[in-house]
Image (cartoon, rainbow, N blue to C red; front, side, top):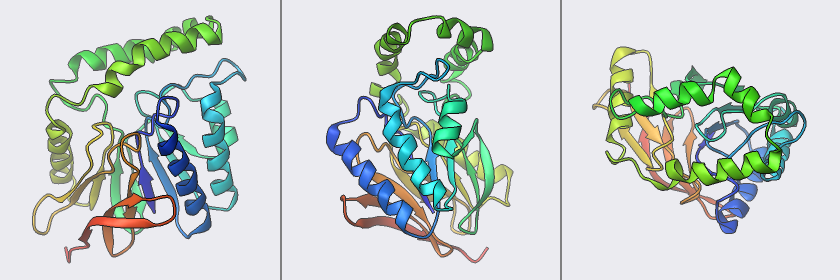
Length: 250
């Protein structure tokens, strides 16, 4: 089981995109499945059957994986939250407006992209999100010519991509620990969004908080097996484990 997040295709460096294609090809060949935890695109929107061209190759790569019988779970982020019929039908992914809770490689997992979860720091963003995701706002945006709409989105989306969280990721880390404490059945909580890779156990026998960081910055991913959760790096050919946490006896 592999987890990636925050590729921001459309603005990602060419070398990071090439590493993503080779990584997804690898996922399609090995045993397991894939979770994409939000912000895989810098911008995604569907004007009927018209979509941003930067998304075509990712949808095709996902389709190869799903057609081989390997499930792909795609959690909406704040940059790729406007997916619809084209994304679902062409990728074959289960496209979910998180959070999602279920079994991953034998671990009881809770997954969310992480945008809007911090109680105080995200108050303003939550209000904005309610507006831009409202069906009336979506209908209004569809009235724009795709070239104009995409240009407008690119002009405004860089802020959330370029600005690192003011709290250094501590807000989502705290939320992960609170989620683990509130539901003792959980083994692992997985967030993205912060662009800060992290893997830690809440306590000696407690659950795990994991964040793969941003593929945009470094080709890192999480790998879950029945025995461990690992933070790994992809070099284009092989995966390299950087740190791992073994399953506890709890």
